[in-house]
Image (cartoon, rainbow, N blue to C red; front, side):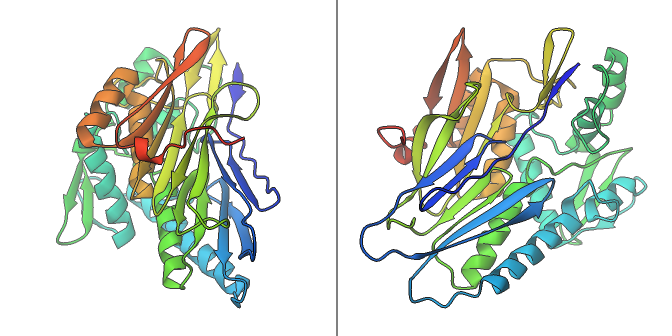
Length: 356
């Protein structure tokens, strides 16, 4: 059996460049002429990946980097304490271990993420489901670790019976949640986007206007790049063996997320099994849609929708994206090459030529 897991690599050029290999995004910011802003780069580990923040502040600014670093780490600590399935004492792990048919009080952040996830689940016709965790674990892509072989059809059917957001019951007035049966929540497809938004919100509260935040490939930009115009981000061309750019985009105060099936998978018996599990079937997706990039005012929702559309496949993803008015860029296999399409809502973000 052959496994390929995501690797995240970050490199900084003369002024600024982030390459988020895991989800296929790269940011390229070019130098401005004349007086340049001060660039401050902060980073650290989180959620099994890394976070990066780049700040462009006026040259005369007296920025306290240690204060910002501590504040960002505090934000991420709160998110991890609530939503990490790798921590047995986290809010989500305690809910997963709680008995059924009992109300479980949740924090405001937890409720926000769950509500958004369930909305995307409904709007994606069930292709997105935060109760899919047992199937993710069964296929070896969760915190329980890799598997030696694909599970049997019987195992998939048995575990699949635990999956479905209809097993979740929400009490809005009490900020409480209950479940029917042995439900296991997993926010891994939305929590990084939420963390990005929370970091951005905290930075804005500190008076920082121009920045880029990235957690595990999910990004949010604010204000202007170091050269005084919009932040420029590149969408990676998949499966080339090197970093090639498919198209470049210009961003303002928005979030962006990319999901794809080409960096995290395993092979067994000549068959490739993607980490993207379709909760409706219990099996990894097997279609020609390779990469989905979503731009959205909420990075949390961009994160969730990128996953949902990846599960849906080219035609259904296109239909749902149009129906929901999403800014989406799709890359699909076409024999030995690739084709792409984007929605009308995505068009204003595109540059005419790829960044070189």
